[in-house]
Structure formats: structure tokens, C-alpha cells
Length: 223
Image (cartoon, rainbow, N blue to C red):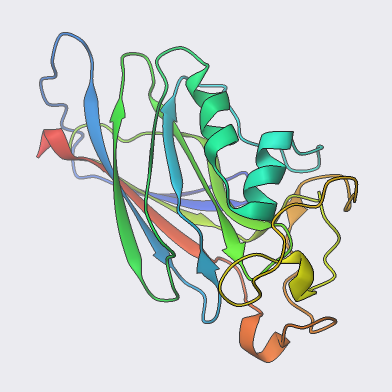
């Protein structure tokens, strides 16, 4: 079976011969390896938070206002509040990569899936941007020997103006401020329009075309 589906603007590929479901422990705990590849030429990703949770837990909704936790992640790369929000739901689990994920690189995060938590989300800030981020949210985990592949577009939290000024962009390129309390952006989460060279960032160096990240998910304790 080879299926490709469009979910929330994300191209989803699910590959399997015949679904094989391995025996699992009575407590229902499974272990997943989530590999994220940076598909951009000039943008880095901050440490990536990966979460497993019950269906219906969402990090964001396109076209709706961002939560404070999402804005903190998208502006400063701090996934702590977002992880706390998810971990406050029943049987959720979170894990994170470390360091920046540079263009062309792949990192794998291992995360547990507790009983009843058969969906996943992940998020990380894109650098250098004002409030750009990669994310997938509330997508099904594969089972057994299935492998799920998701593609993430570049998203914009809509919480900070995209002035492209280094004073307002954290990270090794700009060394600016991470947050912008009291300064609003577009006011809703949307697909990022990219870098246009209106401030300190050269579009020829930092602009991108979607998708920006490939995410591959497999259940490692079924191998």
C-alpha cells in the first residue's frame, strides 16, 4: 500500500506492505523514533520538541490566534511552555533534540507513547526569522512496522511583525531579542511568506520555498 494524503496543508505519505502489529507491553507504552530533516538552504531550526498525546491536542490552528506558548516558541525558540501545555494533558509525553539543526542535516528524537496517546506533534523555531516555525500537530502515529512521513511548511505565529531586523531576532546570525511583549504581528497563525530582504536579512541567503522539513516516524520497539 502506498498512500499520499493532504492533511492541514501537509503532504503525508504512509508506507506499508501489510500492516504488522507487534505485541506490546500491558501498559501500552511504545517507543518512537522521529527523524527531522532540514530541507532549506539557509535556515536553521532551534531544538525540536516532539510530543505524543491523545487525539485532539493541538499546538495551533491555521487562521486562529497563537497561544502564548506558541508565540514564545516561535519568537524565542523556547519550547518549555509548549511542552508544559502538552504534558498537562492525560498520558502525554515530550522529548527534544539539542542544538541547532542546520540545512541538510537530520536529527532523530526518541519519544515514548503512553497508553491512549496515539497522535503526535512537533515544533521548532526557524532562524533567522521573527516568529517563523516548523510544526506538525495532532497527526496519527504509525503502528507496527508502518513508517509515516510528513512534510512541514514554514509557519508564521503572527505574534511579531516580520521586520527582519536583527535586533528582534535571536540566534547566532542576529544575536537579537527573542521576545516582543506588547508588539503584535498579524494576529493569526499562517503560512510564512519567507524572507524579503527588508531589514538586515538577505533574501538571496535566507529565503526558502516550502516544504522546509521532512519528518519520518517509526515505532522502534516493533523492529
